[in-house]
Image (cartoon, rainbow, N blue to C red; front, side):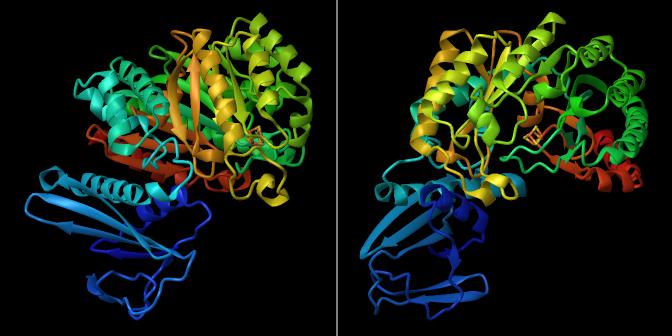
Length: 517
Ligand code: SF4
């Protein structure tokens, strides 16, 4: 799609909404002032920063061609976005505006202007698309943050949901879902002291094998066994250094989450050494949740569970993704659904709370197959169930092998089933996020029984408090009151992580100067 931006340079916002509404199109920016694809009814000349574009109406727009012009203008009171889409010989126009007095500070201004640009694009495009996206003109990964802003102004849940539908064209069921998760986040926020409370994340970037949909840079333990010991050493040193900072800054660790990768793929001794180091380094008085991802049932052993118990772990994630043996095989898992049930029984026998993850839209799966998986998982009574939508990420085997994957309508059927079954059984949605490149543009939702919200998940996704991340692939997210966010990335590959220990000193300086402000 040819795109012309006038009066702004929010390319990313325009591309995002274009890809949501016209997934087959790719952006092509007009830089040639003689380009006449964007035919205007009258013929106009526009000034956009340093480039003058002349839109010429002397030639016919070719049938099937589609192009869009996104313009931002100001008057004394409003900033107004106008999108004009030209398809074949017809013009479709959409506008959205915001009061200029709301444009305070660069971050807020950028966010609000991009929002009206996307709204105007959506309004212009709506008559051209067959299946309006369930998230309407919202393209961000955290739609519940929008609902939170409304709820914080004491606007009721139902009015907030209606506002999302009216203003942003979010479907009524997604608007209700989004408002529920925003309410759950707000309830959690009220229990936090954001000046001192932080969550701790530890990344263990090893897995027994690589799943076909995974783009996470995890190393198979078998292939990289020699890296486990130096990784462990580097991690122990980072634990010690970060713990000193936590103490010096007077921070309270409220949640520990060990993820990856698959932390339980470490050999027992290494696993125990890491957990012991965490227990010794950090004060546990304020810890409200300690979770370990034991994603692959083939890595869960009684010994590991005993080590977890000894060190205060209360919640274990067993993540089958599917309970269909064929699908498990297709995605590269080396275990069966029966192994999953056995692992869950073992974890349950040690009295842990259990989370289980499923993915809607896996290769080879069907709506009936997914329904069977959900029913099977629910029959094991986990305290929480996270239902993801498959994201086709660059670098994953799926994107290279091009297997048959369920289409958007099939994924919608899977998610609708999950939503109704889980609600009927007393689970509530407590966190929600979206990823790029998901089938149908759908979402990932964490569901839980009352009182079993995953605190780390909410704090991290909704940016309620800072997260200090250690280990491979860890992303430290520093959150200031007022919304300023700073991210610090640890190396992903174990090999890089091991050789970049000097970076930890600069990370500590950044953490200290941000949190001491
Ligand atoms: S278990 Fe998770 S991190 Fe490991 S390969 Fe599979 S999807 Fe990737």
